[in-house]
Figure 1: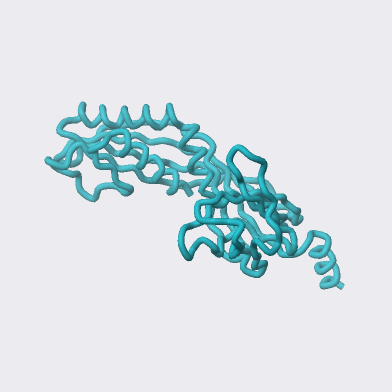
Figure 2 (figure 1 turned 90 degrees about the vertical axis):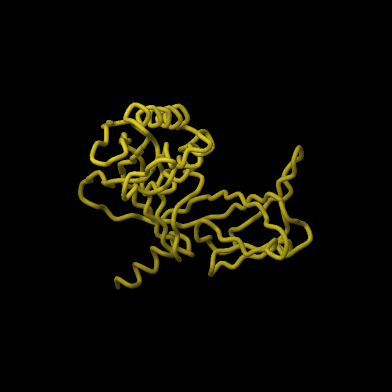
Length: 253
């Protein structure tokens, strides 16, 4: 559930440490000179906090606000997927104008495919690079679960002290910049397929433990983080909650 967080951490470490190699999987065998120092950042065990007995989830209307940046060339018009299934006739779009109020686009300036939950901008009111905010109503039944998952950083260098140095610096980058890291990864959203979505939200990064790695020719050091978060499991509907309830009642009788 935290693979995106691992990738964001890798990008931050690579940008900070320059020539130090940082990869997204554990080393099958410890790297050797001249490929030192080297770091590996990757997720570990995932666990869900136990809950009591499940209760039925009632679909609820949720107001969604989603930002889009229009692409260049022929791709400018889209279609652009919406994060959630939009209720029919609920979508409106606003063009963001720097240093000026937002401009509400007319229906002829954009098109919505409600079956595919996607929006397009074939009109002349928009151009490549424009930022557009889309607002719509999504009917959702959501189950939430608290989770925790391990995040490992392995560091290798010419000796254990040098390996520990690079891992310690990586800890400093992560823990002092954790708020920005979490914000960036949570903006990426989750995974969606048709009317179902899984959205992990990472909320906290804790440093748990560290230990030297002596089992290979190249000395190393490993630290373990614990990432705490919340997993949203979503089912989406194209109709209003009252209509869904009516259908269920009719089926029961």
